[in-house]
Every structure is written in structure tokens, then in C-alpha cells.
Length: 279
Image (tube, rainbow, N blue to C red):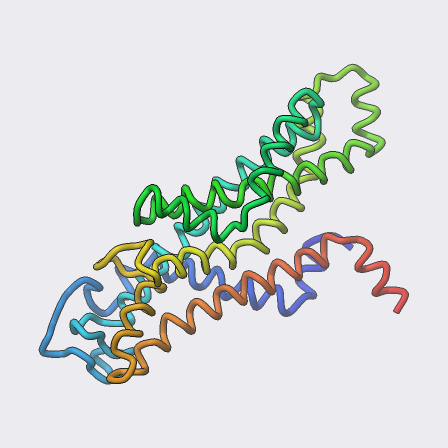
């Protein structure tokens, strides 16, 4: 049974993938879907109730919550995916080098040991504290804090896959190391990379939203879900429903990435299916 057949039979994975793609679609076409300008201030309509003009109400400055929620997808999801892409790329390059070249192994792994000795959240706060608030600095902080984990994981996969018969045969035939990596190792690593990235995507979204909630991430008036939660917190006693839209979106998207990552791990793990067949 190939990968796609397994995926199509997993309803949770399909539902999670549908939610993720749907949210990304809304973010891409936000300018055409949003009913109002997300930055337009209208104090005469502040705290407007949910209705036809403001489907999810308005905030303390009279800005449309739905419009800010849709535009916030670009800031929260897209920048999270960008941070993850950079981190994964560094992890793949250094992880494969450490696993395939013994001269680089010691230096790279000792660097990872040093970085992994610090809690990732604390390291991100330290980097943002030194560089200052802003989405670019959050991405840098995430790359610094998470790269070592990806390097370690890719390194372990590379070591195990080097024992595959066709890789050993390719070495015996005298192919260069870079040819073996490009033609044999990277293709088999691709599934593991996708699985790791999907499992970690939810954590990246929470990191960006959490730092923005603390005032260290995206700065006003740019719409971002964590910052929207922070603004809604200040008026919670007056308009408690303001916290629901951004909080629900963070919950549903993070849960979708986590469920999809779990499903991909089960699909790509042959031991899972062999044990399931025995049961």
C-alpha cells in the first residue's frame, strides 16, 4: 500500500490537511474576501456586535475583527512556515554533512549539544531580547533555537539510512559522496523531513503568537493572531467575545498541524502498520 492510499484512508489526516489548505487559501485571497480594511479605524463603531456589517464584530478601535483575522493568516501562518523552511533547510544540510562526513561530525554535533543544553523557549526570548521586537527577529530566534534539534534528527536518520543496500552498493561502485546524497539519501529523507516539519509547525505558530502576545513579536497595527489576543485581553471585561476568534483560529490550526503530523508519522512508520496488522 503506497503513501497516497494510506493517506486517503486516514480521515483525520484528510480533515487536518483540508483545514490547513483552507486557511492558507483564505490568507492568500484575504484582500478579496475581507469585508473591510483591517487597519481602518472607526471609533464610532467600536465594539460593534456580530452582524452583517461586522461578521465577527469590531475591536476597541472600530476595526473589523474578521478582516484582521484573515489578514493575520499572512503574518501568523506564512511567517511560521517561512521560519520552519529556513530551520529545516539548515537542519538538512548540516545533519546530512554530519552523518556522511566524519570530519564534520564532531564539530557539528558538539555545536548541537551546546545549543540543546538551553531550553528553546528561553533561548528564543534571549535572542529576541538582544535583537529587539519584530517578526524578522522572531524568525531569527526560531532558527537559532530549533536548528540544533533538526540537525540531530536528520543526522540520526542519515546514519541509519547509510546501511541501506543500494547506498552501500553505490559506495562500492565508486560514486562520489555528493552523488550518493543527491540521488539516494535525500529522496529517502524527504518523507522524514516532511513528517518532522509538520509535527513542529504547530509549535512554531504558538511561538510566534506567544511572543506577539507578550509584545515581543509583530507590532501594531499589523494584524496578527497573538497580538489580537493581547489586545482583546485588555478589554476582556467589556467585550469578552473579542478573544474568541483569534484564540479559536490558533487552536484549530495548531491542532490540525499536530493531527496531520501524527498521521504522517503513523503512515510513514512501517512498524506501525505491521503492529496494527497483528492486532
